[in-house]
Image (cartoon, rainbow, N blue to C red; front, side, top):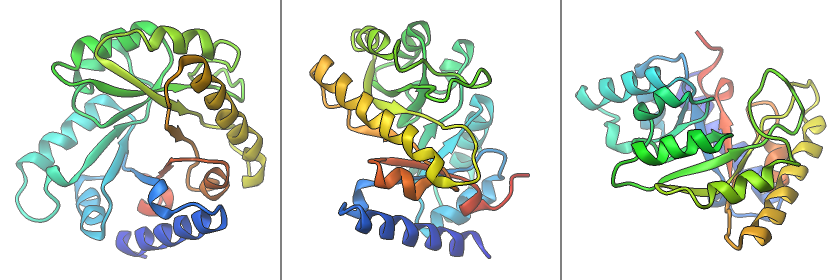
Amino acid sequence: MTIAERWQGVQARVAAACERAARPATDVAIVAVSKTHPVDAIREAVVAGAIDFGENYAQELASKMTELASANGPAPSSAIRWHFIGRLQRNKAKLVAGRVGLVHAVDGVELAEEIGKRAGAAVQSILLAVNLGGEATKGGVTAETAPALARLLAGVGGISLDGLMTMPPPVDDPEASRPHFVALRELRDRLRDDLGRPLPVLSMGMSHDFEVAIACGATHVRIGTAIFGSRS
């Protein structure tokens, strides 16, 4: 299958999942995870209709942004809304802050402050990463420590805390992710009441479980393999 065919298939599945959940399909942004895939693949996805693209590595993101900005032909860089979805090191914040629409995985006030300083005139939208599976190999705060950090992040200049993200432990059965997705939504609702701000974004769900995530309230699903195929 081509990238365009895979993209159309994912769109159809997202629309069907939204219909089952009694939600409009426009409620859910499909973030095409383009990490390790070449710029030509991104161009092909843009021509097919993709807008949101997610990268995990700051230097790879910066390189792709530069290459797309200097290229002629279809899929100009202005057609793309970038997302940084990986663990961002503070010394790489300058490559990301103010250049992407959303930073998905902030898990410390020091990183948030660095992003805010590097955002320039922009206010950088961020999400608080929550590690609900307790996996030592993944970043993110626990559900218990999230409220205190969220209160600190709400006071950092140059950023806007707009929601939460999570990545459940890998499983074969997509339904096994449901408790994690429900827990993130419930945590968001509690933080929304605590902070008195809407926190509209829930970034959760990937190629194997995004339909379950949509049923649980996801607003952003991060889909790589189902769009681009296996990683290089």
